[in-house]
Length: 439
Image 1 (cartoon, rainbow, N blue to C red):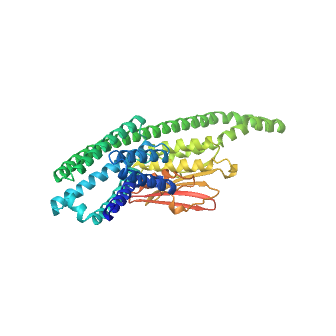
Image 2 (image 1 turned 90 degrees about the horizontal axis):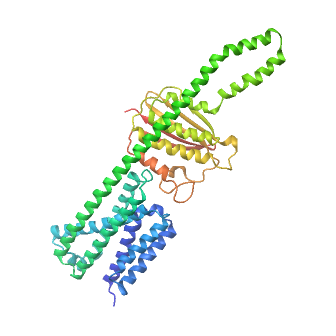
């Protein structure tokens, strides 16, 4: 006969395991996928109780992680994130048990017998908080700004799986000893040490990958700057060639006019002068306006994105009327955000259903006594979503499991108290504005 305590035990076990596994990636799962994951955990727990109590914990985790892997489009990092949070939940549980034992002389056996419901309510709330913090930390420091090589993903997953297997084995052994307090203390030290080493390993890995990503981003920006400089040099050579020839051009035109040869003059103008005019009116001249932006990292990223826009046939307009040489923010952070905004704008303008006259991109940068302002504006036929929610994880006009770029941009700017970010949509024009105040 199953007691009320047993029912509570099963219920809390299911709820806690679901929170721990789904909590760090809940923004990546639809309601149907969350429900299916909960059903799998519930059924596995029932099987564990009645049929295979020794091996079912392993099977439950394997099934859950396989589902998470496929639910998140074969993303090994999401599996590692859930597994890491699972290990964290075990460590937190044992730390709480250690505090209760040393501070209040309450052993695990006494808690299970007398305070099980209140204890597990507290643990459940703790898991909710820890899952939220893990999710936010991952989104802020990793998100889509770091690319993990496949071999590192596999190595991290194997390492975390080994840790989880050891944790489960030790817990089962502790359970067989009826939660001997000596064994609880040993597991507390062992689990905390394992998790500490794991945490150091993951922090170092993320640090190295972030540094590598920043170096790659800076290299890309400087490559863009070199391309921009080459473009300026080519334009300058065109202007020099034109200046060199314009006296001869004017002399030739005067010769036609002196003899009233108007028809030959018209033919000469159409064949020789008009092509030069088209050359100097080409939209690529907009790139020359970047000369007033005197911050290499920003100039490089803008050049790369604007060249892509021009190559796609998007009418691109740039306005930087006065020199801008300094901003009170990390250049790499602003470059990352501007790159995200421009990628989104170019993607929106490259839709096949847009008419040619609607494919318009406008970029402006100006400085005043108080701030430097960046504006990126593009035509947008329709904006079906709530504009105030753009930048929220997994909320995008592009469909489910998108919108990470704007979320990363928002998280990148969040630590800056001197930056105001604004998004507007009016008369079919979508505008992203960043105002960086001088500190």
